[in-house]
Amino acid sequence: MEVVGYDGVGGNRVVLEVVGYDGVGGNGVVLKVVEYDGGGGNGVVLEVVEDIFLSAREWCKCFDKSERPCAALRKASKGLIGGYIPECDSEGYYQPTQCHTGAGVCWCVDRHGVELPSTRTRNTPNCDAIVNNVEGDDEDGDDDMDIVEGSADMPLDI
Image (cartoon, rainbow, N blue to C red; front, side, top):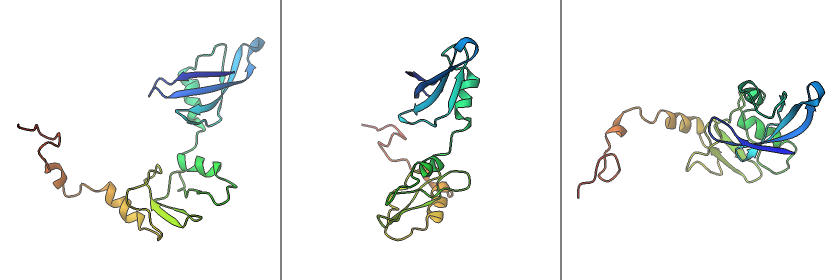
């Protein structure tokens, strides 16, 4: 049996699977997270005592053992032949340079794995310089003064 609901934070869809019963007389329900916001669940098992409502403590416990995005994808890709396996840093986030050796291409990403535009190449891009430039893009402050008519920065006079 599955329980479908929404979290109270961002309205993300949550699917929980009943995997057993616990507690006095089997009144508690043991749930496993199988889907979160359209993605896979982290498989964390929640113990819900005497009801099917998740308390704040039970909800937070769900994410205690969740993995960072890169580490989770890398773990899921284990044993995959010819597929893309991400490079992660020590905290489980994406390394700036990602390569798909089977396809012979590399590209730059932010720490969450979002590809930076126009960085995909057959060579190895200098992603550290690109990522640092993107993060510190507003170093001269000139961008703040670029007001173009009709750009929503200022009303268009007709």
